[in-house]
Image (cartoon, rainbow, N blue to C red; front, side, top):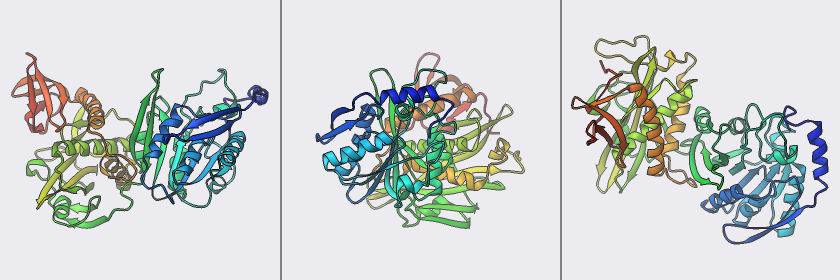
Length: 490
């Protein structure tokens, strides 16, 4: 299962020599302060900082008893043994036969029952998926993904040892994992996948790839090592899998319908055609020839969330779904607080928008997120306004493809998924500000009250602060009050 482009006969000979080294005996301490004794052969990946990081994430998983867990690339078996300790029924696998032997030995030595198979996803599949993953779907799948970028003709530790570190697969092991999740029953209904990666060139598109393939994704843990390397654990899942999905061929407004309903949080309503869709300030939404129009119940509790911040989250979800449909992100513009625009032939036009609406019901507040996006349009220039559509930049974009992506991106920011922490305000605002700054480069200079401004910040209520030439700050509560030099709504 190793790529001959990186490992050759010399590496194989050196690997044999490495086997002469003695196995290491190590005591690994779990997050619950228990000791697990491990016997680790010289070509098997030992517990390191990344192992501890995944273990702490697993330790916080709700009600693991009776749930099935699969560890891909188990190495020494430390994580699999800990998972079994806290109640999971564990299947482990590794392409390294010495890792398989090590994990089985440690299972017997510690009297912790796990099943260990040889194999796993990779450039070459050695047998059926069931050979290494078993016949039953898993509630949790974990994988400390090989995250180092290989350099050809450079010294190697050895094919087996570096299999735990290098992703030598041209397609990418993460892409293969997504394909397995889509085409097999390896992940149970309602299940999650936990992957650990390093923030480098190999992993930078993980979020976009997940959303493009229809999987929600959320960062659940980060750690910066002494050398400056940043490790990150992501959770992946099928979006709103256990929630109700409704469809109406024609409807007045999906937002209004859900606000007036008793459907629970996570319910989704899509319209084939929305007859009286609207945006902020009651503006009518133009439903183009092919368009997405849908709404989600995102909150129905006693606490009252910040509608401004929810609007920004919806805008970011729309922006990410659009990017998943395009080959380049350079044409996508996120306009604060709720519009998505496309730059086409040096012209910026609106392609979609977000609307947050709420209603109070006694002691509870019900909040609905509505999103509209143009997929295809025969007429982009109307009497008093112009629009953009995704097919202008990618004529292979379809409504089903966008539906797949928007569900994933909305769930990534909004879904309350068991075992996955909610999005932190600080993390979201950092992410949003990065995207917004890129968009401002395309939108141009902001003008407020006929004064030239520059962007300063977004606060915890989702409001924008601009700064004028005299360094005076101006808190902006409505995007309609800002005029951008490179964008006209006419």
